[in-house]
Length: 150
Length: 280
Image 1 (spheres, each protein chain N blue to C red):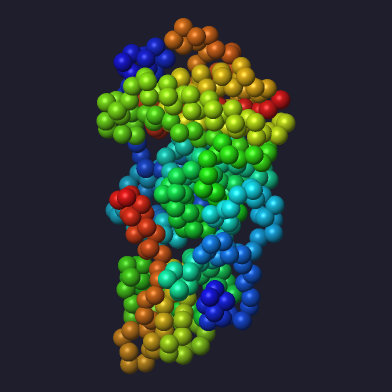
Image 2: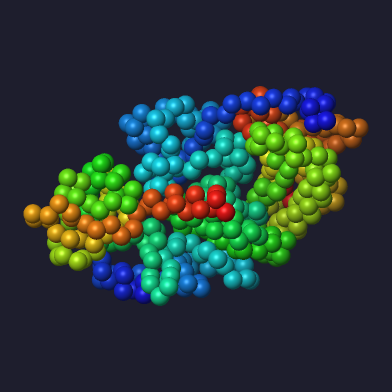
């Protein structure tokens, strides 16, 4: 499932190890440090299978943003709106790189070329919306809150 | 009761107002770059004089955890005293973080070398994993297990031991705590430090820390280690008072002064204790 997701951005291969439902970047050096019990976390998390679907990690999105040019760069205002879970609009966008095919996935980058999430490209001309929000780094806030509440 | 004890130790039960402190994630950004980015957003920062890559947040118009720089993992919100154990350890190669969650020190260690992190509570481990992902840590292996079940040897171990805490951390700390609880913690800490030393290679370094100001959880645990194992104390160069060498009628090792204790009213941090031991 990880492979299918990666192929939407690049033809390059990402080697991984799978532990339970989680995928981690292959790391030979780190393997030498293993204890003799099953680990829960191993180096760079790439994503996990959830209810039959693959959910990428932000580590994977970061990695892809260095390997792929399927990116949308956003202004400050776009960054904040996207991190609050909103779709991207024309006024949010600085520039678009890669193929402009409707339905394709795009990595969302801030002005510093740092990945803040990804979404589905829905077109530009005559449209207000450019990208349908899929996932953003604001999720860390929600996760933090959940941990505090429980 | 605690007030009188602290007076005998040369300290004071005085709650002070702390500045929020952030540690720069140097895996992603330099301290100067982060400072410039946050100052552009009118966050007023001041360098923490006794730490390498940390700032006090003097003022901010918004909650820092909601800003993109936090969500991007460019910094970690971490009390200043709790950053000292890693800074005085300076590990190389591989380090064991024995009681790892929530991951502040784990991620700080990962800036120096590879980390094996151990946590025995599932819910706390998921907080650790969340922090590792946000901070982009790629050189840490984390295990859900009791540290006492680890058998691999290490050159560096950080034991930030579970402790009774201190009055700066909770409003009702004084009501919740008593000497029996402190003694119970002390017994667990002695067991943990004994196991940590057994995992150290010769010349290996163990940094022991707690956020307790009680000698039973600090100097007495170190004295137990000195009495029962082949280890020596090493001098720590940082802020704070020297460790106690004579307290509650107990004369302790003279090198206990090499340890550091942080009294909130003196260091403007939470209460804290650190010792650095080397296996002979």
